[in-house]
Image 1 (cartoon, helix red, strand yellow):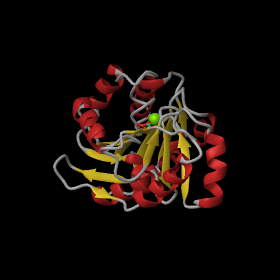
Image 2 (cartoon, rainbow, N blue to C red):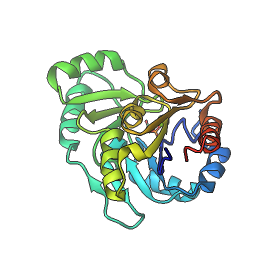
Image 3 (cartoon, rainbow, N blue to C red):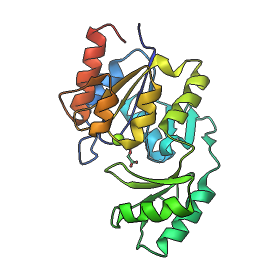
Length: 226
Ligand SMILES: O=C(O)COP(=O)(O)O
Ligand SMILES: [Mg+2]
């Protein structure tokens, strides 16, 4: 079995802990001769710039699956889910002191600074907004629709690329990568990943952050899996 494409997270997977790009990971990704799809919780313009600079432009799953584009100049597909997230945010912000991040460019979810009691907010949200969830990626807090995630994004992207999701190797580090790793044909968790991600991964790298990605890609190449 040879996989036909890679889908890879940004923060914590091709970056260091401080979000600076891992030059080792970028260099390794550039050498691959199969398509590399960026899948991130970040907004599309950030992901596009990252993809261009890494050199894997430009099939992108942004906003945790809410925004998808296949090609730099193509019109993105944007899920119509922001209203329920806005309503949940309005409701919660009367109870908690919340600070929105990236709100100018974000189209499908709300991102917040991690300065409030997420667990308590989750309990309140659960009873009033059953279709909305709060996730913590260790880089930001997202109020998002339960109906979309990087896994549903991968399904759409695979269709756009004429592939199956099982043709992909998925690489990630955190809760927002879970469905994408479950959907892909081969799942990689980098060494810094959350334990529940490592538990479902087919390969867990010894190394962390970008060096973990380099290690995993070298393993896949030496095993003739890509
Ligand atoms: O947006 C986040 O919270 C994390 O971003 P990532 O999905 O690229 O790791
Ligand atoms: Mg990440």
